[in-house]
Amino acid sequence: MATKIISVCGANGSGKTTMAVNLATALTQTGSVVGLIQTELAYPSIQGFLGMRIEENKPNIKNILFDTTGKYDIEQQFQQHPKNKKLFVLSVSNYIDCLTFADKHVMDDIQSVHKFWMNLRLSNFDYIIVDCDNDVNNLLSTLSLFYSSAVVEMIKPTVQGMNYFRAFEPFINKMVNRKANTPVMYVANADENYFGTSRFERETGIKFFAELPYDKECKDCENAGIPVIEGYKGSIFKNYPKHFNDFVKKLMKEITSVHSKNSLLIDNTNTGGETNG
Image 1 (cartoon, rainbow, N blue to C red):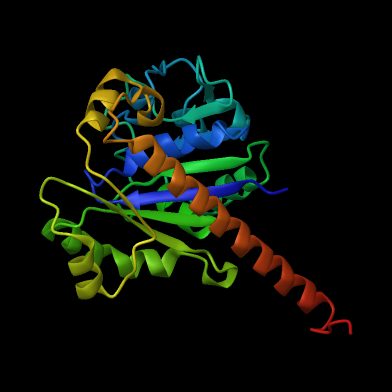
Image 2 (tube, rainbow, N blue to C red; image 1 turned 60 degrees about the horizontal axis):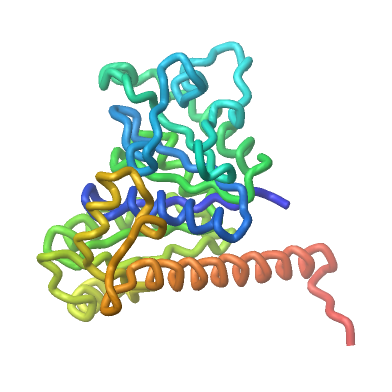
């Protein structure tokens, strides 16, 4: 069965990386083997949310992107989480220089990037979670949208969140594979400057798939290098992990539904659209 790729996109500060890390962690709790990829190449991020360090001389994404010989197996460049044995991370090292990938020719070979994602769709992972970059010229990030089984777009229901949405939505819609009926799920991530989902939906015409509450303890967990759904203490009045796990269940149900519809379309095409009866 093909690996399901889920791309998580959104503005800086929208909760994009928090979503990617916690979604990957939640899926491992269901028994799935999950790969988590950071496509931002200027500095390390996702490993810090997981309490990990990635050394320069160890497997990391630089080995793949600078490989001109084809000797590197993509799956072998993921690093296994020291505690969560079903979670594997592919990112830049903790010692990366932001100029390492500044040469625009590094990722200009579009066929190599297509091959990268096609190989991962046939990998041993059950899921690949992609933490997307906001740079539309980052082919590694943008092409992940095309190969995704689902796209999760994190949105802060704020004035700036609306500005981001209006600027990036045409691009995301263009990159997503509509022939595969790839769903784009809009997730409202509450903020201190939050003005409510109703106004956002009214002014943009979208419908939020889910809403996550604002909770400052999320930052505490991130600074401690622990996924929120594992390190959250909360109180009887707050239960961020429950909200998050409810979202994950809803997301998996949606992906399964789309997969079933696509399988039915393929079957009907192969049989000339005929049905029994």
